[in-house]
Length: 89
Image (cartoon, rainbow, N blue to C red; front, side, top):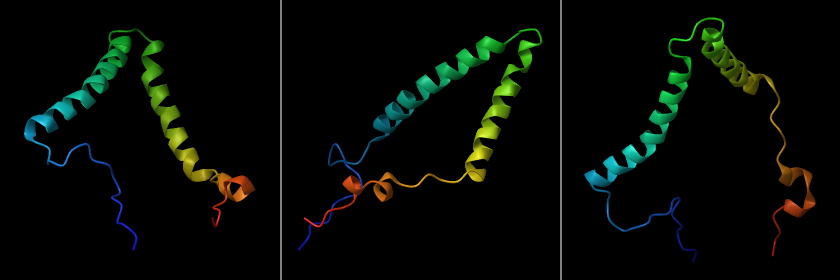
């Protein structure tokens, strides 16, 4: 009989406590906020024409997201290469 394997891996058997959740949230949001502050600081009180750079970056982001729905998805390598197919061993 096959053993049930969890879909995720845990580091410990206990449930996360509130300080653990806060530490993880701060650890994740810290670099995000620092990056956001750096981007904001690079455009704050800048005269035109560079003031349009954030709008141009947003337009490139929208075009990128739009292109994911327009372009054809790539075929998996396992369907193209015989070396990557599942073996029956």
